[in-house]
Image (cartoon, rainbow, N blue to C red; front, side, top):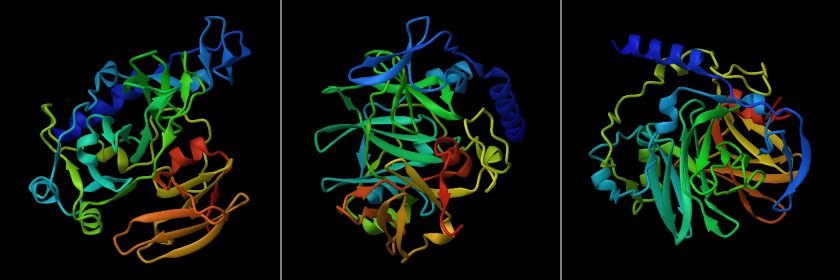
Length: 321
């Protein structure tokens, strides 16, 4: 029965998706100080409209978690296995863990950390976790998953202006806020055992979310086992198979991908991405940190499938190649 459900799920997604937007005649205009395109329907956008596809209606009804509750590590041990993945955030001395198996059903969660509004999000198609501050033009946005994908990656929608936001880039790709970009905050996607060893006082998202979901079920398992990508992407790169996991770093217009074998526990790497020198450290808890050598600033290290990284970083290098 489970396999039948998965097959139906995948087939429906393939059949239901279709390009939903057409640029028509366009021109360039300024929007809040940033250049955007505007089509003959008066829509502002920055992403190729033909790569924004509508998917099954239920994707637009994926409920975000807006009132998260947190528990202690000992309480979280009752519903988390040692090997379960969590999205770990360490911000201004506050540590929080968001289990992937919960966010898989919600795409995103709104939270306030150190009095700053955040979203923590997870894309089950690319197996990617990310965090952004959700304040734009001094206003905190209310975001949720839309019924669209861009470059085979979820698109979010804000309640305030109905603008569409790329989960991967954090940029508003269509709507009144087009070209505005959310500020990313680095996260660590690691096993629960590693995160709690590194941060024994961490808060953990409670499994009591208020929604009736089977958080032990992963309907994407079969999808992860083959090379199929369900939606069109802007750049297809065959140097690696689509669903090889990579760690990606993007800096000042340049990008580089690292294979898991390159970033094992205890690894230290000094490298250059574009013209920027960086120092990468993987501690004994498998938590990766990357710092710019010029100013010591921490940069985000994304962990996801290769096809998504390559789709958004057409000229990415691969470490050691």
